[in-house]
Image (cartoon, rainbow, N blue to C red; front, top):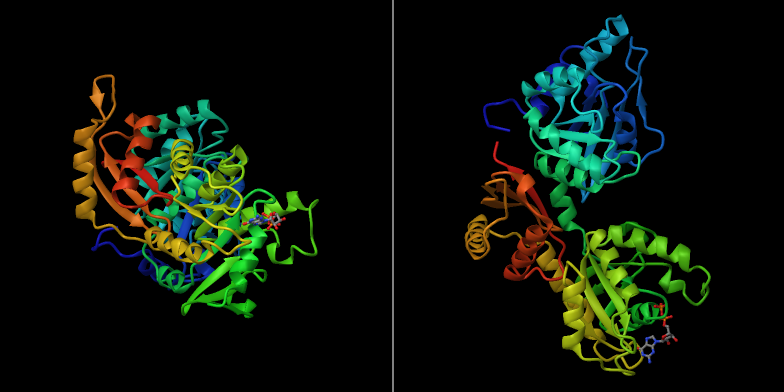
Length: 459
Ligand code: GDP
């Protein structure tokens, strides 16, 4: 948003001078409005984004149809989502008109607008009418192409770029496909908020992942038993009652307990499935994941799956080769395998939970990754790198047009998020995208760190 325009908060304040506007549930959080024609899946998307089965309903006086508002959070950013109930310009009934009027108001107050369409139907005349209105909206718009349940529909969705409203994000609200990408796009476009500062005050959270019997609980218990580690018993400060707050060299760290590792004595096998779910949840709450492997077996496919799991939970990842007392496989070979098979390219540390060898290196290595995970790279450095990379390997070409890389800027951290402006995002191939990501990773010392790169066409 530009300087002269009133901010969404100012617009909200203005609206409130009259009757309470749709932002009546004031939270101080940015407001994201969902608009779209009836039946495109707005409610399903609302529920998906707020993570609720049933949404909180705000019953507006004098209106029989409900407008729904609910909180959502992604990567430490909280925002309020408003389902406007739909703009159906063709609906002539008083209620229809009232709902439409409210939707328009929600649009005026919003910091960001999600325009939802049915990707399988393309843009209908009703959609075009809404699009016309949105062109005049103050807030940025994301075009959400819903019902993109598969690749075919995702491709179809690309046609919606023609609306000229900006980024098109294909999702399947019903199945969850693409929802992470949508949340990334939302958070990236929200106005900067104080919530970030708060998130930065939180101690780093580390979790321990890995398949059964690699030594996860042995490592955790050995770490907690180390002399230099102080274990606090203050469940209130941690985000989950099973998490443990520890202090190493005066630095606070949260160890998020995966699968009840600390209670391992009481709960043995047979709970592995449940453990898996808990492990995933812990990873979602964590900044860094230690993926423990068994040195007597090297890196197995299940280990790679755990590495992948950590990456999908947006954790920075360190691979820990445990049981080093029993076997010392060739580290170069293991590193090579990891590089070939995992996009995030995590570094490796070796240790033995039994002899204690190498244990003291784990937390410092995890903290180093954490620092990289939170790093901010100057725009100038990014663009120098971008120019060199474009020279080294020019972008792919399709139908006479070559992808050109124009401008790279970091838009967020923990994990690092970047916006890459290009002439036409549809020219980016999977292969080229991966190559670019890995080059940036290597250049800026982000090995083991997840990166989010969002491609944008120039407006
Ligand atoms: P988890 O399922 O990953 O939590 O694995 P556990 O911590 O329960 O360990 C599985 C088995 O491996 C136990 O018998 C441990 O004593 C053994 N173990 C764990 N770490 C080491 C190690 O570094 N060296 C050796 N020799 N055995 C280990």
